[in-house]
Image 1: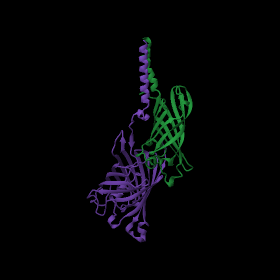
Image 2: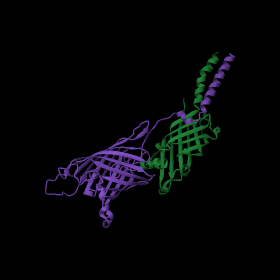
Image 3: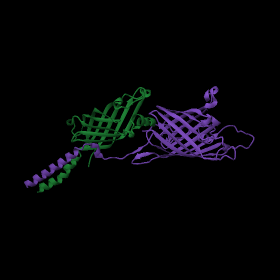
Image 4: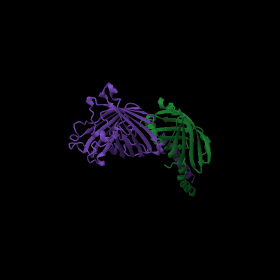
Length: 184
Length: 296
């Protein structure tokens, strides 16, 4: 009977550890760089949301387009109004999966290289992308970084001839997330 | 005892099953809940002027906006003056955004050799979402110093006679991606007027709007209705129609207007042109922005 009581007491602990298998953030960092001989453009967004589910290896992101901050105010206005049409398409999202989940041990500190594959939606256009990512586990803290390239033309974003030399055809995207365990 | 264990394991198994069931949620991000944010309306006008009027837009913080504006002569001057192109008045000025809600600017017009300055404060910003605000509201105060030689140097002339002021409230809304409208009640104060029949304080109400045709081009219009019995009959209400053309860091504004002056005290109270007589100036404003202070 004592053992039974012990088991009962342990049950909530068990469920807590299960819940910790999901991680989230609301202030992830997503930035992009467009590098041409004419002009270097970069913008930073510190309000990216993401959820990582260890049990299913699924990972999702949502980024508010208007939250990208540029050095130049006019650039930011053009980005929203002319290129991304953030009124119509307020968010960019990614829904995907860690391709090789066995490569990560979330209960052991370390740095794990993985591939993430899924659907990237920008400007209302969805494309399948695969990107390399690094997942770091340190003392129970989980963080992730990734760098990949996106072709502007793939997402139906038209660049007028006048500024074609100022905006790179391929834009580099950097993602850096510090996850928190999710407690429902 | 054994059955109790069995029951406990069953309970644990059910717990596990329940957990894994929630893990199968279709949309992981929905677990975060909807975080409501405030979206501020931007780009209601392409620049902080409609044509002569101030628009509801401010200059962004840390940005210097250089303004070079021309008004050619009147179209009815005929072919000899190439329909007014032989004559031009010019205003050179600059606006600076101290913060996103506070803009200051200065300028100098060749017309009546006038220096002007303004301060514009944005009190309300149109937004939706968590904070819902249907309009943008700004207050504008301008001052001008006319520096022409005294018409009659022999009489007592006071420096204060050269001063003019205008105060304006700008209320506007971007109704859609295409359409923005604003109204602007205004008062112009002149320290000195020509005759006693003219009012020192001139009240008017302006209306302006823009219709965006495509990503780079918009049509703008503005009209200032001056309340009756304040000005001599030679003065007309200011009416202007034009295009905004945007190319990267520049905005080119090409327009037709019956006002020669490009500042409030002038185009509101001193417009002598009549559209119906062909007293129409072709003109342009060029706006070029420079990011002086970069922000993160």
